Amino acid sequence: MNVRSLVIFGALSLAAGAAAGCGGGSTSNNGLPIINCVLPAGTSITQLYPIPNATQVPDSIATVVLAINPALPANWQVLLLNPNATYRGSRLQTGTPVPLPTPIAPQPPGTTLQYSTVTNTGGLASGLTYQVALNDTNSNCNSYPTVGSFTSQ
Image 1 (cartoon, rainbow, N blue to C red):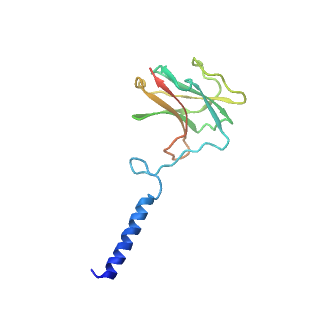
Image 2: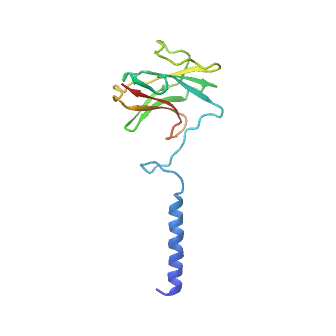
């Protein structure tokens, strides 16, 4: 190689290295792009059941109750996330679930009760912390806003 070729090769190598360092965007562990679910602006959410950061939550939990202002459209659903699994709840329903699970945190004023039924978990793994997250089923997001957590018994 002559000097001119070495200079061009070196410049191209530096450019390629710089481009690789930028990453071109975020990707997940499996190489897919990360697409965030975004809550509507101004939405406030309080996890009521299970009480935030509760421990010893029964592994047979079937309902997650949230207080939301303003209420989310029915296309949103609750997800229970741990490092090993994702459990999907039904789409959000507005109102008070029957039966109302206990113990439940107090509902903040000006919020609407919305809940999601989580079934087919086969029982949650014992002693794991689960993140309570929300998924917009009308989008193709794969990164979810979390609203609280709890630890199973």
